[in-house]
Picture (cartoon, rainbow, N blue to C red):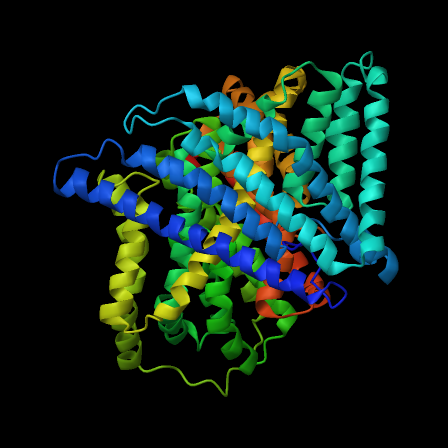
Length: 620
């Protein structure tokens, strides 16, 4: 998989198109950066007003929610312009150059088709929201809902620009014609779908969604096309309902933690806090066989507790640790294999975006998930350490000098403010100072002060690019959540959820068999769909069954997340693995051999967590 649209602008498009794209891009990026900053400010002000001044700002959450939807849509626009929407490219990359170029254009044209189809329903939806007045600010809800048609129109505009800039007019028309012909064929076949019943679920949610995903169409747009096609051609559902479900999926206030933790991850890397933690851990364990591998495992655990974003975690760790590990003879393939494995291992470490998402779509307590996620990651970390010990038990360390305890102590003092950040974040939630959404603003304020006053490393010029990067990654994630929510709603309306519930609940063997099937199913879903869309689609369907079978929802959440992490970071399909290779600047082929042992260890660890509930529930 890949997180990019895969087509870079080339010289075939006229130069003026490049200038238009650059100007329009700037006009979108600046408001998006300001929206990230505004949401941080509003939520932090809410914390200060409520906890310090004892005068809650009743309108803060409402304003943050309005700004958030605009941020999500403008972030999606930036992600489309940059080619950063998540997509699978495993099949496309195997094609010859000519066919691959055509497939890339078809992927853009398919995305454009969805945007064209949903443009009018989104405008209708926004206009319908005019009559609703927000409770605290007392303004029309169209100020919020307008983000959807505006964002969709801008994405459509940039998709057209992307087509024209990456290929000749003839090639672009060829791609558009292919998509138009497919759409027309389905439209003409609409009467045939009426009598097919549940077979339509296979046609649209397996056939269309699967074909689009494997053809390289970004996941969010693949889900959107399948859902739009199903509802438009096989039901009488008003099409603005699709936009309403997208809005519902993207508007959970708890998801506001997504951009804020992404920004926090970038911030701790920029301020040198991540580097300080790694330097201390390296001085402590650098002289042990495989010592820096243990440091990598421990550092990922600590940083995961800060950033909440796996991409941010890996980007913070690899540049600081990989050069020293290579000096000591570590092979690049081994490094990215362990980096990817630790990404899967730390999926449950709070405040993970997956934990936040699972809480928002299933109703499980975020605080309980945060508490329950700590120990399962330790168990999987211990399994990885066993593999490291076995692989490095004969390592020659004659050239490595053990750090003096005075040096270890000095580095500990330097790293202490950074090491304290995860505990500060958790303490503020436990003590009720901030909610799970607001707590990231505490971490941001802490990191800014630490960067300015302690580490004296704060590059003001990087702030705007970091805010834009935050908006882009957040928009890519949130658009998937939006279209996956619409798909889940479509599946529910079709009766699929009841059928799935009956099938899973009817499995022989009760809870143990249900848990075993869930592990395998979510490993597959994690590799194909990635963690967040898989959670949004199947979490609301399977968690009630787990409850009926007597499985605690926090325990089940841990097993689901760890299973998806295995799929997400396992080659050949897992996008997390390729993200690790990109961050480590290593050819993916080099890490496939070394990662097998780590994945086996993680699988064994997941089974242990699944069948020993205390690991997830012992501290609740």
